[in-house]
Image 1: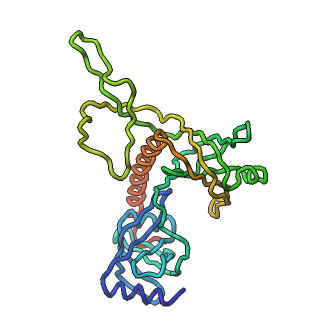
Image 2 (image 1 turned 180 degrees about the vertical axis):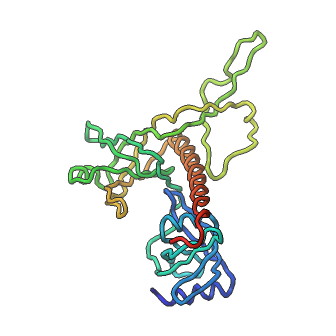
Image 3 (image 1 turned 120 degrees about the horizontal axis):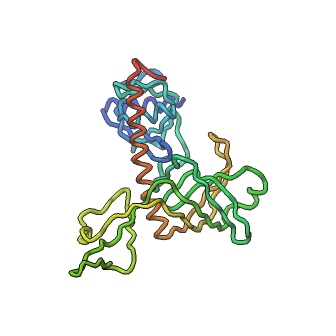
Amino acid sequence: MDVGILDLLRRIATAEAEVRLLNVYQGIPIAFPAAIVFVGQNSITVKTERYQLVCLYQEKQTYIQYPGFPSVIRARVERIEPLALQASLFEFEYMREGIGERRQIRVWPKEGVTGELQLPDRTETIKGELADISLDGMGIYLPENEYYMHLFRQGRKVAISLRLPGVYQIKQPKRYESSSGAEINRYDRTQLRLSSIHTPSYGSERDDAMAIKTVHSPEIEVIGIISNHYTEANTHRYRIGIRLQPNEQYRSIVSQFISQRQSEIIQEINAIYRLLTRESGALR
């Protein structure tokens, strides 16, 4: 352990400043402020929010961010105290990777999603399993063998088709009755609503003229470029990363899927926290 890190954390605690803890839970970045309430010889105790505490318990590590740090610090979790919202951290080290720099939220599917991949110069399609997905990229698991590793090389163009679980909401014009009682459609085409998980639109002038129709999520067809390929350290599965060229339909469907997964993940974290608080004392 770099002893300079502990001295730096001690100065932050003395100044009563807060650090930020960063974890990634099923693809969703979870980052909340944390107060350093105690600094020991080799460890610190922090107080944070329940969502962060669950991540600390699940992952057994976290990343500490602070404007004055040379880089992000990784720390291991020694124990947590759910009722006190506290955790003890130790074994600190600076990270040289770009932790926390991803701008797009990338979520894992809750259930298995199988997709088909096709290369421009091949007639056959190859099945893969969705690892994670964002508005501009996705990860796909493939069987690890030399054939696939040769086919799906970095820089190659690939077409992907898959169907996400869940439902999809279409915003379309309401149907109105004429004076004769017949229904007419005021518009020629169904209008798709591009929803945003960050800045949803409220109070649109035409909201009262629109209706929401809920359907099963339609199939996605999108083109992308293979940006990387590697074997995951934690799962030991071979995966390719694809940088997408998304169309409007893709963005609309995936935006709603990400929003649904966020809600499910928050509910899951709350449920885990309630279970943790039933245990007395510290948990390791």
